[in-house]
Image 1 (tube, rainbow, N blue to C red):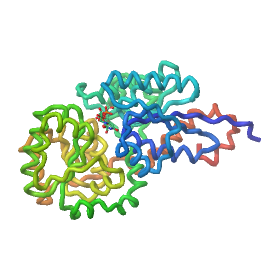
Image 2: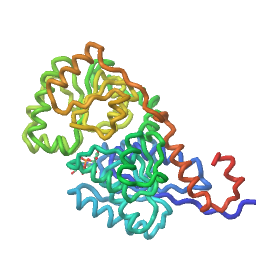
Image 3: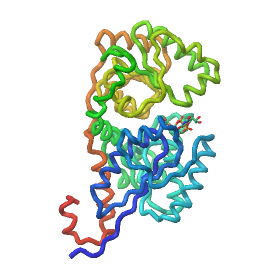
Length: 386
Ligand code: UD1
């Protein structure tokens, strides 16, 4: 007979838009084990706007956060420190058994550091990705989070290699696939109902999508001017939809570039919801982006993707997928655009384990590691295949 059980209390910490997408399939997977796991959703408040947070929660069917820390925006160190201070109190009070973090934003690192200081195990989902560009705040977040994590869940083989090279123990590393793709697969049908194309007066495969939000690009006026130059030519070939991230909008205003961005065929919108954006991506002729997640989504939708950065921490999207790293090299971009319009661009394939089941694998790994923690008899776990 089973003894009285105790549940594994897992703090799932999120802060910024891409975190919400990654945590959604994990929370719904954890909820399949109500006798074993109690997931607690903690939102730091790094992203707080309706469009950047609430709308995305709604689109993903995510429950309201159990704990909200109201941290808001700020310089990197201050924001990270504020998250740490507020989270520390909550963790001491709630005593979770495991802290799970996703991705590479400031909230990810802050939560991992607090957990490490309090000696609570950390699980990092999307571990091991490396751009090898330490000018990116995300690169610092990735390296440091991985250093203190006890579970390193990876999306591609390059990540395993990076972690091993950094001397991290093999037993901590689990190649599980990509939770971002789990979310995409779950939302694909719903996203097809979006009216975004009609609303923006676009035709399937008749437009480009542009996204820009990386500090190392949008915080520099010269880089925005370079992008404007590229858009002038691209806009003569097809309409460009540009959902504008708040950081980018603010910089365009501060650099007094608002008028320059008013050009025919450039459709600037507010940041879009998850379902509208998936629909927009899946019907595009080409995607130009500096985002990591979008390179991955483009690969799954088999849409040509030009990455406007000098490198990618997700090399599988180039090796196997539809991605090409162009930087802001105008000639290279226009050459690739020509290839795309002539339908001569490479076709991509699905990277290994990007099958929509990464969350399932992650939760199983965690449960197996904690099997002795539960006070059920071994036979109880048979039905869960553990
Ligand atoms: C953050 C992440 C980045 C991620 C991106 C996704 C870090 C270091 N960066 O960048 O890795 O790809 O989120 O969107 O964690 N703002 C609003 N409303 C909001 C949130 C932000 O107006 O809801 C504005 C504020 O002016 C803020 C600025 O955007 O200062 C930047 O926000 P922040 O969270 O610091 O960084 P992101 O550029 O969004």
